[in-house]
Image (cartoon, rainbow, N blue to C red; front, side, top):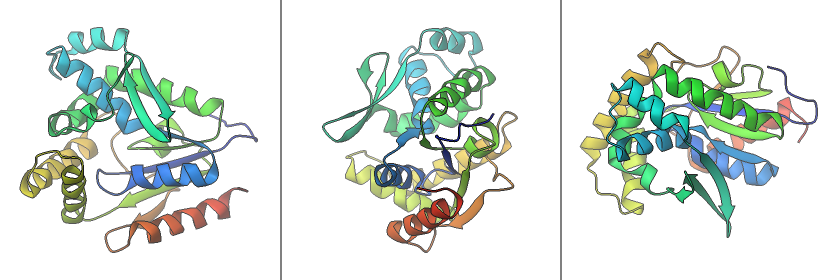
Length: 228
């Protein structure tokens, strides 16, 4: 898929807890471009299904949920918010329950067939920084900039555990680490759009770097590849 000369795509892929969302948000502000959190889209699907009592193995039930689903990203009063079918769900999609199910729903063919075209449409009309699991490999294989963030499982679990504490979400480090390991297995071994580093993506291991240091490295790569 070709992008226009005026617009550009920055793809950031990696597993949960590598800092994708934080870096993408911050860089979007610095570059004055749109930030798209594809993980939030899959979380919205997960939440919508769970609210209707639809399990991942109920393919037809998932199809019904997908038929009329509407996901929107809005910035209100300087805060990025996520809306599902007209209702704000920014906090609801980040609960441990959604955490434990999202990789299962995201692995479904009908879910990915619904989400991928939506993500591509978002990048057609504007410059975007998009983060997820298959942005540089499936959604935008011709993205001008591709970054793949890596990090040890233990460090990723600690980061997610601290985030949960800050948000008032009750979880233990052990439970978070278990979920991180389970998601790694599901996301890297699924048949459709598995998590894998694109051949032309720049690998950054964030384990021993601060957010600021990692962000500086990403920005340097962006400036080397496109005129911003």
